[in-house]
Length: 316
Image 1 (spheres, rainbow, N blue to C red):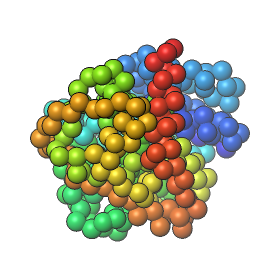
Image 2: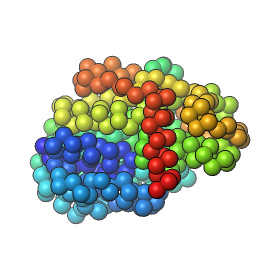
Image 3: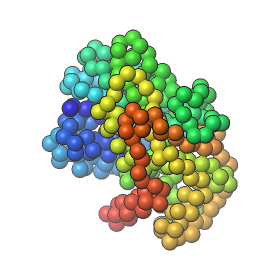
């Protein structure tokens, strides 16, 4: 199988490309090295892949038609579309950039796929789409029409495009809603990385709210397993939760990190920013049914693995 992985230099994309190569797939990776965080980090993410004969890398911008046409000319069997800019809080300050980088790039890619006769996509969506949904755990048939950040609105628009291209052109598309992914290569702006770095360096940690907000923290290996299964099975048009299906309060995450590092956090409490949801919790019964997906890595084990990686990176 030949798979096009967009966002291949990113946190999840680089792990996915490695997993697909490990299963014997030929992988075409593309990334534009968006300046949201350091290019050096993304190049390190690619370092293992660049020596794999099954992997080909293209630097390019999906908002440019010539880029998406050239990628689709390589005739991938499936497109795993992970490219896009993350960051709920940053999106509030730069909403137009998020609609451009996330939604417009997806339109360009769909159009090139249509012209090339490529009909299978797995799209990386987000649990942020649920907003402050009152029903817990979140299910795919819950109303999700009130996103509270430009980031989540941009992803909701992409999900609508997935349905449109399925309806008009017969695309097979799975939109996977990821829940708070963490693990090795975590983006430096994400809570797991920021808290760990502050603890290890003895700096203050900004805790938003009183620590009672809840997230369904999902280890990256579980996320990648779900994406690989979707790539292998995509058929029809479905929205599917991919999460750990176990929630933790923010304070409990800090407690686990303090225990794992042997350090005590110096907390500074800040107001919860606009755009942040109060809780997330994935109902993964649909993923179990369609993908035979079963998350396996709990928070304590995932934190231990993340810390092992972080320490190695810090020493390197």
